[in-house]
Image (tube, rainbow, N blue to C red):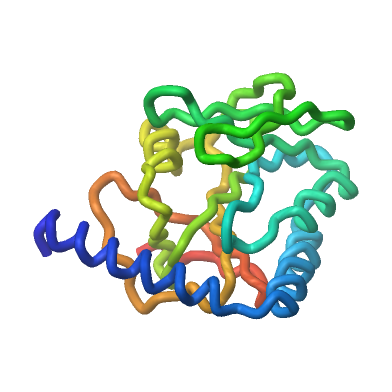
Amino acid sequence: MTDSAIAVAKSELRAELRRRRRALSPRFRRQAALAVARHARRWLRPGHTLAAYLTSGSELDTRPLLAAALQRGCRVLLPVVPARGRQLTFTELTAHPRWRNNRYGIAECLGPRVPLAHATHLLLPLLGFDDAGRRLGQGGGFYDSTLARWAHRPGCPRLIGVAYRAQKLDCVPVEDWDQRLDAILTEHGVQRVRRP
């Protein structure tokens, strides 16, 4: 598949997956968010540093998961979108955070900056995923750019996609820079990815 064909396929899949997410009922969304938090409690441990994100639009609500992480004694980091470029930075979610909205209208925590290398796990938002750990993001390239230099090398956090099971695809089209996940967390549990 050519690069332009992959780009077209991704664009069509993004539109379809956004429709799928918006079609989920509010009740199902609440139950799924609570189920994801329950599943995460099984592997969250005191001393873990969880780089996560705040939900935007129709994404699975991460607030119960973040609350569970804090209750389990984890440190929580949240992304900050740069004014220019694609390299995310992360700030620590403190007991009394201050907030501001970024250029996309997403709340960002104004806590102390913490290098991503300190994280043990990185939760990634996504529109689609498959069993091989391929991830279809929103298309901005922020996470792929941030991880390009050191993903899956020693010291890199475990990459965990967070999604509704309805976002699963048979095969996600990928390009050279797309980063693969180590696991996917849905309302059905944690699915570890087996690498070829």
